Structure formats: structure tokens, C-alpha cells
Length: 111
Length: 111
Figure 1 (spheres, rainbow over the protein chains, first blue to last red):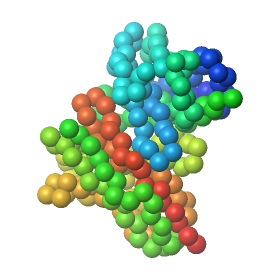
Figure 2 (tube, helix red, strand yellow):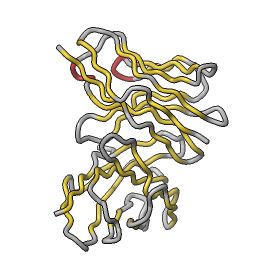
Figure 3 (cartoon, rainbow over the protein chains, first blue to last red):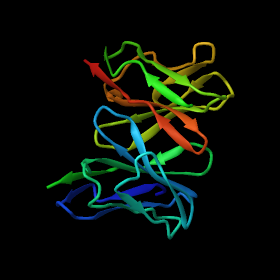
Figure 4 (cartoon, rainbow over the protein chains, first blue to last red):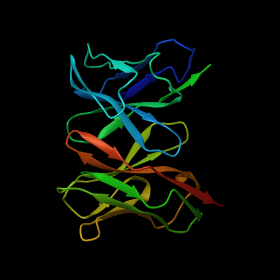
């Protein structure tokens, strides 16, 4: 099956802890994106990557970090510097035609 | 600057009646516009996309949208609502290599 997978579905973070959200795609897309979704708001762009070994900050990058070592993978780390991490995180990929395809999301909760 | 405004945060309809979800956009050039749907705790699914071809765009599940440049609108419609249409709908405009999301409209469908 072609598509985007995100894991885990739910993730719990303790105070001061870094956590990493996984995103994998087998659509052969060059571009990948991470969004944060809060209740009553649209999606806000955290980071994006147009090509392997390159990525750019989005609108709300503070407290987050990413890597893009493989075309298929774009993991997001929520660092301890992110003071309000509770949200639904969505990963997407695209082939340069503007349309983005989304994964099922990871819900991050703080203990 | 590119932006979208979804005029209603909630819309309620009865099953079998028409659906209208309103979206106005602001763009300094001819934009690409999208509607995405999100069911609870799921990722986003593309409903339809406008890219300056036909102004009336047909999407999946019986939805369609009309691009009206004079009104800067891209409203989403469906002739007859189904219970399975209950979800959150996002109007989206492109900004170079990024997507700009509206704040969403939650559609409720009553039997």
C-alpha cells in the first residue's frame, strides 16, 4: 500500500523530556512537511523539507527539530524547549504539484 | 499576502439537505485552492483542487466548489448531505511552496 505512516498514534511526554515523532512515506515524494493542529485552529507549519539533507523552518519552529537523512523519512523531535507541546501533529508529503498527502497524525500529551 | 477566511466555524444541516461551506481568499496572484476534509482524530484527505482550469471543480463524495474571482470566493457545496459527511473541512491556498490553511468549518449532519 502506498501512503504515509506516522507513529505512535499517541505519545506522552514528561516534563523536560525530548520526544520524537516518526513519519515515513513510500510515495517517492521529494517534499515532506510537519504541521501542528490545535483545537479551533487551522494547521500551522512547523518544518518542511524539499529534498534530502535540507529543511526549512515554518511558522512555529521554536522548540522543534527535524532531520531528513532519507527521502522516505522525516522525524520530528519535540524538545524540552517547547513549553506547550500538547497538540495533534500531522505529517504530509508532496511531489511538487502543490497537493499534499497527509498521514493519520500523532496526538502528543503531556504528563 | 495569501490568506483564507472560512466564514463559518460550525454548520449544521439535516441529512438529505444541501451543504454550503464558505471560503474567501486573498491572493496577490492567481492562486491554487483546495478543500480538505478531516474526520475525528484522522489525517486530512483532499476533496478537490482548483488550479486555473475550469472554475467549477468536482471532487470526491459528491462535493464541488466554484472559483469566483470577482468575489474572491471558493465555496464548497454538496446537493444532499449524508451522515458520513460530518467532519471538519479546511479551505487552503498556496503560498509558493507552502499551504495556508483556514481555521476550519465543522459540519454536523442530523438525521
